[in-house]
Length: 197
Image (cartoon, rainbow, N blue to C red):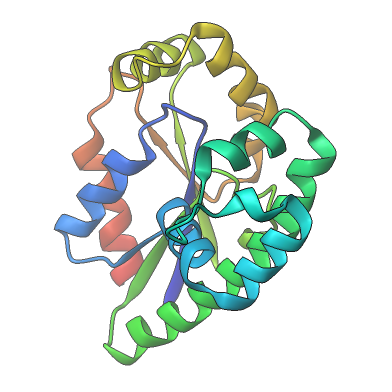
């Protein structure tokens, strides 16, 4: 079974491309959603997060206080690195268990969607990587429509913390162009057929 990563900058359309693959029957691991789930449900990670970031990391009901964690970790590169160093190994183990279950089900391939696929080192668990590409101006416009609470400056800050598009394109085994000029479905159908062959 092929393990294929799918990455791209904020607003590139990774989730849309993943939904197309899912429609074709491919299982997709959503790293962001699973990371949130793991942070909320993995007792060891909860203890580690609380020890590093304080008791405010979880609210009185035991729910992850994402706003607090974002406020203390994201602006500070050292704190963000600490957060990632805690979370990524747990998510890696969660992915390995999930992938083993998909292999047992007989899938030809699976996808792991992750914005920080290279930055986290998660690409090392994979056979191939797809980069979803869109020009920065299109990506910014998409994010502003999708996330009205964000400012253009917020988006540029996020883009600045992600690996450059040029680097992602150079490292990719496959590229899906989501630039509002090329149709997505034919690109996804071609890759699906290749991965099943």
